[in-house]
Image (cartoon, rainbow, N blue to C red; front, side, top):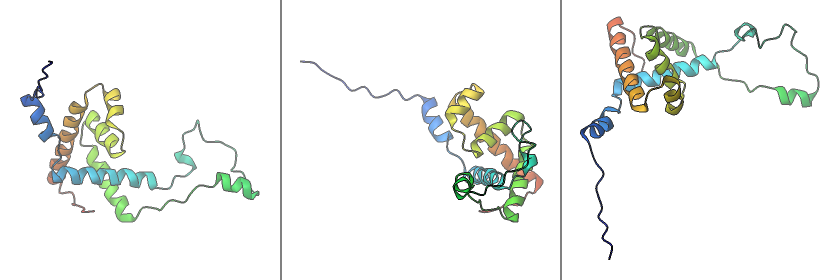
Length: 156
């Protein structure tokens, strides 16, 4: 007869602390949502020909497409333009980013653009928990900077 004994998983003090410390405070969550809104606003802004890098844009004029088949294949879906309030909020959030150091700024902006943790782990060479800790520190620093500079609190 084989006796199997269930062994409970080892719970170290570090594991239990990490689970609690990974949660964002309401103020940090609001800042993260505002940063995501700023990233979405920046993506939604219309781009002109000069916004395209030199290696991609062409010196030739745009072609006039007369065929309905060609037109339907090359047509772009129209995007909703952001409101002036959204652009103002984006400007405020981007100005706040410049108060952070380079790595923190990169991390906060990457998370605002929904870049997965797995890709950030590969880029930064840190573990996910270290990146999450740095992300929380950056959001806390943004919160203190925001309160020191008297930046208007937007509630979306």
